[in-house]
Length: 384
Image 1 (cartoon, rainbow, N blue to C red):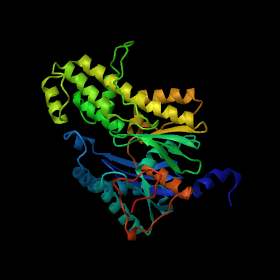
Image 2: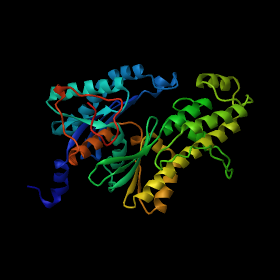
Image 3: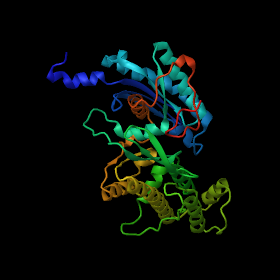
Image 4: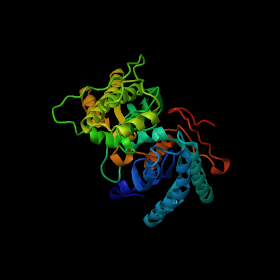
């Protein structure tokens, strides 16, 4: 029986404790999450340095790196659980099973399922994209307000760009998304053309920030689509290429293959001022397109708050612009701390807890096999 002074601790004890694992692309991650919100322990091993030499993620290399890192990270997080005296409270494993690179997902599913089977614990398949949205609920022990539902959610990363509405009961409805490149993919591709090393999104933003104070930058053109919540970023890439070729003194011809253009620009480097201008124009165009879609969604759903997740959610101008839009529409903006914008396992624990609490999914027996899927539309059942 809890006394009044012990009530907070008793409530904490009743909250579900999940171990979680993420391996959808090139980050290996394991975390321990209480109640879908409090991160008690976590580890992330990034493969950025491995893939930088290739200018992008190589699936086979990523899968091999997961083989190396996941068992180590799992051991370290479980050691912390033992030290805290809470290892016996773990109820199950929340596991990313899609969307993502199949090889990477299979490694995570194999490592996670083997551990869960050995411990007699169940596993819970989690959609990676829902994880990015649920990262907004996370905290590390400090006071933190949970986002109210319903909400408009924007997932914006290297591989995904989509707008959703999260209902009060947690159900997710897809409103729209990119019809070609993801926003982060466009950032990375244009950064590579400008000679910025991989991963290029953050470096391109830093380059754009060098625009002289007071200088106006004209955004690159973005396709106007009939669907109010869809995006297209391939056009901004083409426009950036044309500007780069002209600024480098190359013929104004229709852009050819990316490898040829990259070689041409390496042989005829862009003047620094031109690179800064193109970077700023690129950022302005992409941020403007995302902001427009979000504002339309907020205006169509006046009862909704705003949640943003994914690696590109760490972009400063995007955060500032969406903050102004949310304030203008009388809404609240919820964005995870920087460390939980990129891929991590804590967000998978948060999503897993929400799925169970809202009765949108159930634990499964790891001995029966855990399927993975390269494509898994958000808000839909796990493909089998």
